[in-house]
Amino acid sequence: MKALLITCEVLMLITSIFLTLSILLHKGKGGGISDMFGGGISTSMRSSGVAERNLNRITVVLALIWGISIILIGLIVKVGV
Image (cartoon, rainbow, N blue to C red; front, side, top):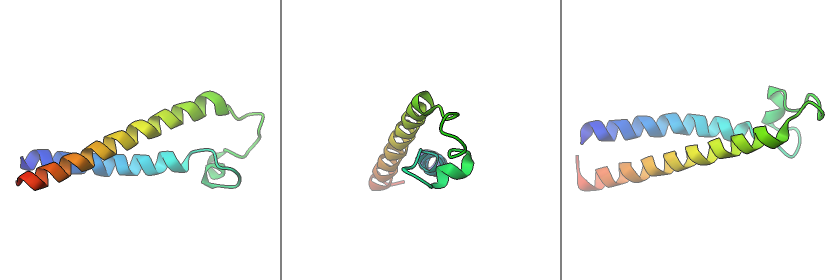
């Protein structure tokens, strides 16, 4: 049980970092952090369709994994280690 708890905590930590980064990379309504990474260079060079959709999918998957790991940690702690 202790190994499962540690695994869930590490998974939560990793997904938290990547979830934060993926949220910050989303296209803002103007002048956000996404512009710092080349998002605001030119509007004609931006491929907002496919790239934004893939980023949305990645963000949703990361959020689901993060939520499941939180629930698993809660269940493991409730049952007792």
